[in-house]
Image (tube, rainbow, N blue to C red; front, side, top):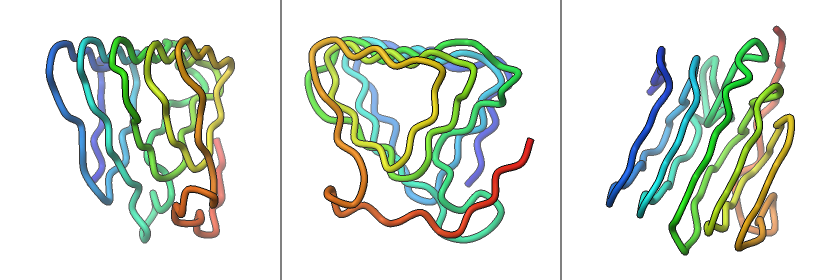
Length: 127
């Protein structure tokens, strides 16, 4: 489903964000700290097909994921053109990423078809 975050999201401690057919539409920042595991996949049909995380260009609030050794999965497009993305200790797998900057401390990044991710369906992005 579509999850709209009006004030952003802050999660700390042991937590899991998981789901399939999910799009997060964020109007604020996002910070995940401690031992937060992420395993999200985008919808394959409908208006948000292929989009797992969307942050409008008018929102420059950063996204930071801290403190967990492991892999986080974002199957689908992550779009945050005006915001900085920071990973500290995580190895993200992403199908497609647009961000103003990317900082990775403690790991690399997996992307695209080599991870056997679904291909993005035909997408049209207009702002």
